[in-house]
Image (cartoon, rainbow, N blue to C red):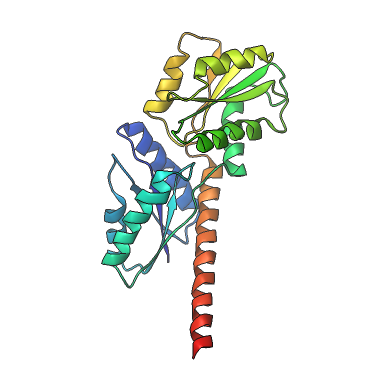
Length: 257
């Protein structure tokens, strides 16, 4: 049995880790063929290195780390690779592979759309406007990719519009997004978090609109079945990619002999 380590961001907010654990339980039920563990990059225990050591101690020699991250930023490009590199140094006989981030995959778009519908609005209601609440980044390209998520969310619906707003200082703010949606003709606004779990930033978005009782707040993605399916696919892709690389290396060695 191969080990899958689902690596989440981590948060001081206990709701965040509790939500991640529930989501990973869904994954375990979907993939009983895997030994699924949870690790966190920061602020929450257990850390990645500790979990890798525990998995190796249980006899695993093949590990796939799947980042539960929506963007390919510093955590995915630097933090996690460095942690896994350290683990490979400690356990040279173990194959440790990092899978791709979750990104703006269609499955997550569908999960957010489901959370919106859970608030009671209809998919074909032209009075509905969606404010997609996201983190915000110092990298403008990352913010633009998140803005595109709102348009993907809008596709195939009858809603008046969808606008990405940010919890940090990036524009537009939640208030600005609501104003923009009303200018587009929306009279029913739903704030949809582009977050896997609740925490300080989702609270900040809600607080920014706390004086608007007519604004609905959808739930985070959380333990939606689509998240488990996507993590499973990221794992399978990483395994296939690793096997392809190994096969190519064997072919190269044979050609040289």
